[in-house]
Length: 281
Image 1 (cartoon, one colour):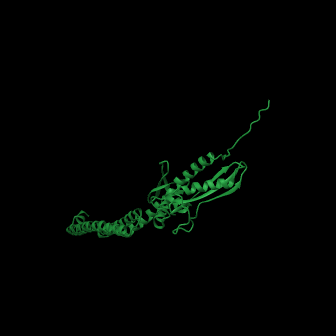
Image 2 (spheres, rainbow, N blue to C red):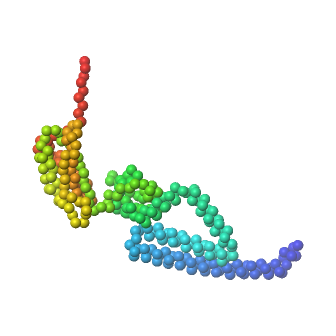
Image 3 (cartoon, one colour):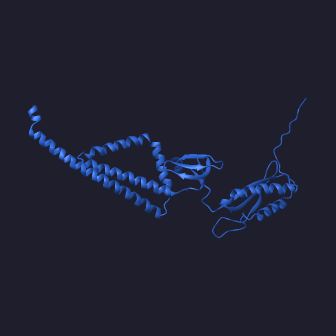
């Protein structure tokens, strides 16, 4: 038995196998080095092409990552086949592992798919002011799994992309112009015409308030003021004032502060809640 194992034929077969394996290993190393260079060159080329196409930075970094991963997987399969290892078993192993990972990370994959949808269809972009999932803020970064926004009080909010891509979302930065709607409450007995006249003068005095229709918008109109409700404690006067989106909060506070100050100086009362308490002895 030992004579057969250590026979010259056995040494010859081992030598031939070792020689063939070394050749395959050398070829695999060369293929790896060449493939590594090709992958690096291809990803740079893809990234450069996407930049020239003015694609969103988050999108081209994501796409180049996907291209890189796919090319590396192909290179691994090629090297395995060169070494003489059966690739079908590895492919089946990768497939089964992918299914198991997919089931374990179903929520993460939903966020991944949501990130892809956001990057492709662009319901918002970096720098937009949005309201979603109960939060408002400026979009700072769109990642593959999450979107990062910063609120007005400098809090960082991380929102999963799955909910963003399927839920309702309000984008305040999409339109060039916005309308500032405000309700002012006045006590009964005042002169409504004088109140409306005073508010219109305030609207006309601000250079940030648009005084009439503009050519590049179908909705912008001149400032409007009108009585909208006869409430329990007074009348409700509504104002509708158009401005550029970037000036919204400036106009919002300007209208509130100026209307209060000037109408108060003219003797108009702003009703407030009151409670009468009767003490019985």
